[in-house]
Image 1 (cartoon, rainbow, N blue to C red):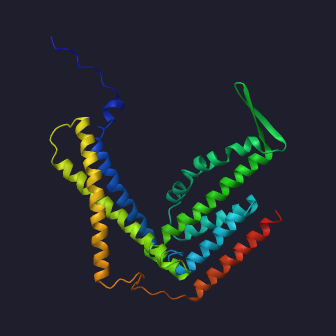
Image 2: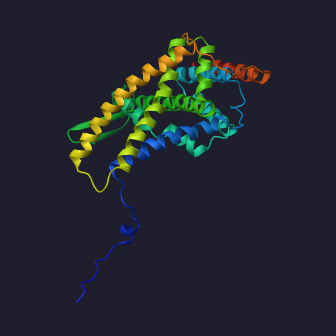
Amino acid sequence: MKQPVPHIGRKQKQKKEQLSWLEHTLSGITGSVEHTVFIEEYARQSGWLQKRDPRAKLGMFLALLLAASLSQSLLVLAPLYILILAAAFASRVPFDFFLIRVWLGIPFFAGIVIVPSIFLAPGPFLFTLPLGPLHLTISLPGLMAAIIFVARVGVCVSLAVLLILVTSWADVLKSLLAIGVPHVFVLLLLMTYRYIFLFLETANGLFEARKSRTVGHSKGGEHRRWISHSVITLVNRSFKMSTDVYAAMAARGFTGHMRTYRTYHMRISDWISLGLSIALAVTAITAGRFL
């Protein structure tokens, strides 16, 4: 008699096969490159912030960032955040994508930093949490300080994320030079950004070569030995690549200063936007002292 086929649940039928560690790493590297290219697409759209001069845009964000950092009131932070959301909407940045990038990790990391102040700050108490022999009392000033801290971090991170989404990395670096940031610092940022992509492509090539030459399943020891050899290979290639890149730059007349072909022109709308942002930042800082 034939043995009955064991029953397989619907969830188990729908469950896909798990990728191996090699495929996981390969897909993660490829996804990182594609994600960065996808973000650059927002900077090429015809939104309100994309039309602003990068130098004016950087000045606008720095003014609002200063106002948010010095604010101690939710009545100031809330309008600033609403203004950021309006600017993101006018710049054609998807709300769900923007909110997830900002608020996915802020409550966790900011909460870890500010949680002790909820229990240690003096003032009127709200309630007590019994944790075994300990009784943690939450104070009203500590809770309000934690909420303001998380809101301030959220506004500042929202400004930084929005600036990166609507401005290409090359424009950001050139704007930093325009406001007086040292060339060495900007050049370091530029080379770091480029080297990240080179390392990702190199690692991607190593993983693809490994996958195309692997037949069957490998043991854990073989995986570990291959990883250690790959790390050594990447380190050796990085040193060789840095030497080759510097030699190529020196051969092309590099003297330590960045030169770009794109020129910027401040229009009247850029000056108006920059002036309104500075005025808004001054108003927020002044209002925060009385609220």
